[in-house]
Length: 483
Image (cartoon, rainbow, N blue to C red; front, side, top):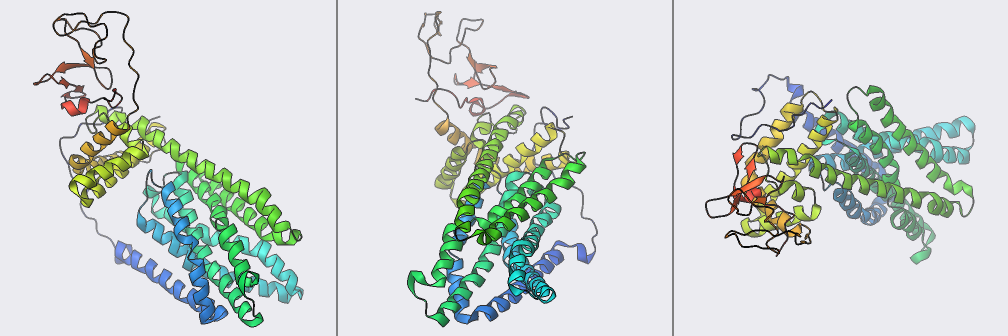
């Protein structure tokens, strides 16, 4: 049962949202919590830095750092591109990367080393302990450590975690940070081995490690952890009454991530060509399938924006052209460029914020219509509407311009019956907007929803919204024929 109204209340201007300040204990203040989290991540980073440098040496650490950083911008840019429809805050991305690179990497190094040594001592078989540690211990420890970042954002940043794409982005960025630290360790160790054996060029251990980990499989760790993110994302889409689904899906995604990770690590035990067989027959198809799933989900989000926002246009919060523009990534980009070109970079940022608020509003209404919104639906809707209201003077003209530039041209077919013009003359092939005649014989146009439009003060059409006449620009139909 939907809890959102069919037509939100028309704005009369911004209004304060929420109650007054509440007393909070010192440990509940945001600054204290953020400070404690930053201190924890910084301490983890310093410890992991010392451990990696101790194992690789200073020169090996610097070489590993220089090589490991190469795929990071490409991977983070790819995940940011996926998140363009409803971009999450940068602080979530920074936290996810820092957690993966510092906290998760530290947990993995300490736990894997302890478990492998314990198994070797208990079984007196160091080689078997290494194999067991790589195929069983490492996937469980590493995927659990990375999943902790997704869980924390899911619990404490619930408003920023609304679906599958958010889960994929957070999990992928966390895994990118983890792979970055792990690559420093592996590449630095390989460089140290080359220094001892004298390996040079493409035959060196460093070159082979770089090719396998950075060139062939930079997406390996993100691919594993993305399964955990999908589990959390589907759980975020579930309603509050679907408690069993919300509880079971994240652990299921985590188990799948562990299984894929274990299969990948165990490929070296499948013979001389086991790695390439697993890579070609399993990893590449899995990567392609997940990429298709995420891109399809991204397109579905844009369709949700186009379907949900017309209700707010009918109530007067948006112009009729905005739902079309906000549901197109090209139109959004053109709107930002238009505002930046005419009013400067602050205006472009205002348009970007307006687009983000409008997208969050569309997703909120979609969840409310499906009965999956929380008890704070009305409060959250009011917050988003008033945040958009503050930027409407800059954003709405830019989005209307983008709608005009991106609206698909419509082929005009002449009606088989005569259409009478202003002076009563037959216009069999008259203008396309003359769709029938009014009581006085004059042509009568139709707007966005097909309502009649009476001539305005200068003969221009004037639309009728939910609360009476609106401005001529609001009656603009983005699907009209472009000149």
